[in-house]
Amino acid sequence: MTVTEQRGAYRPAPPPAWRPRTDAAPLLPDEEPYRLLGTGAELDEKLLRRLYEELVRGRRYNQQATALTKQGRLAVYPSSTGQEACEIAAALALREQDWLFPSYRDTLAAVARGVDPVEALTLLRGDWHTGYDPRTHRVAPLSTPLATQLPHAVGLAHAARLKGDDVVALALVGDGGTSEGDFHEALNFAAVWQAPVVFLVQNNGFAISVPLAKQTAAPTLAHKGVGYGMPGRLVDGNDAVAVHRVLAEAVERARGGGGPTLVEAVTYRVDAHTNADDATRYREDAEVSAWREHDPILLLERELTERGLLAEEDRRQAAESAEHLAADLRNRMNEDPELDPMSLFEHVYARQTSQLREQAEQLRQELAAAEEADDAQEKNDDERHRGEAR
Image 1: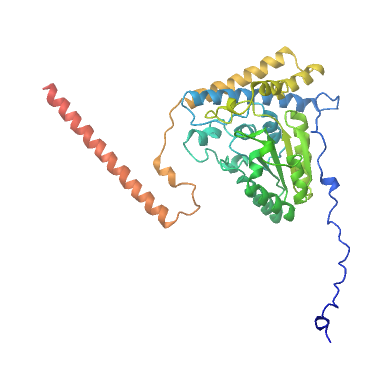
Image 2: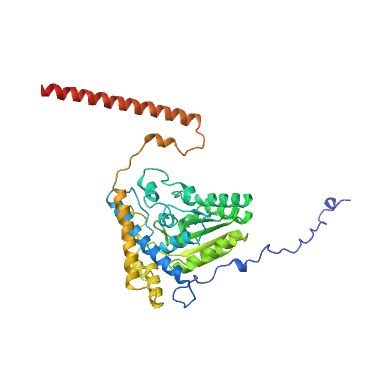
């Protein structure tokens, strides 16, 4: 008689002892954001100076780009004022061969990585989907859809490891982007594959007008890394030195085969979401003023001054460099671009499809016809003017 025939006699065997595959404790972030400025820690003086100079330039870049939107030279600009420490630190934490995957707000990170300041704004001007060659500086196109750049970063990093290339990908995303499915998919794949990728979440308090408390019940966004099996790091996003150290450590950990890391930088978006947003509808001026006291440039200035590393001449040189950047940006953006309609078909596929070739030929004929019509009209105008002169 089988067990199934002995009705009521079957007792399942106890399952084997279950244990988690990894110890979760080392993956947990610190209880408080990691800080270095104002702690008396030993710091690299050269890095302090570099960060300060880049932050001053970045602040002026944000101001000038915002002004260009008011002048109609940019369609939109998502300012990163107040978040400059995250952007600059991300660019400086990478080696030349590494890749940066920015979001739409991360033009400053792209510029700090070496992208031409005007080309970094081409997308926001409405001229091209991307105004620069991503391979030149290893900066992926600015991503307007939320979090879609994260799976791309994972794919590139995983492919690089399979080929044996010494490459790490650093992907930037906002707190709002962590509510997207792409965020989940990217972190899950990265952890399973142990891909050499670092995720930096710039938690600036709001996804447009939605505060973080209405997006997630997690203790911090850094805690989300534990669910995927990767360490989470929590850092003061306005402490440029701390952000740089945490990112540099995560990048080298990934480079050495340690897998991905999720870093949450707690910062604040001082300006509105974009020039089209009215932030006064969902936050108080007192809140903004409080964060201005924790400004990343102000924090660096205090540290440099206390260490005797910031003379008045240093301030002047940093300001002059920033003004030169702003003037060059302003002058070049005030020039009307020469656009070639046929460029619509470039950089779509490595080899054009038959449909693209057909569309390109149709446009070429339309442009030729329009040019012939203009020439005929000009000829008629000239003949009419000569007749009137007689």
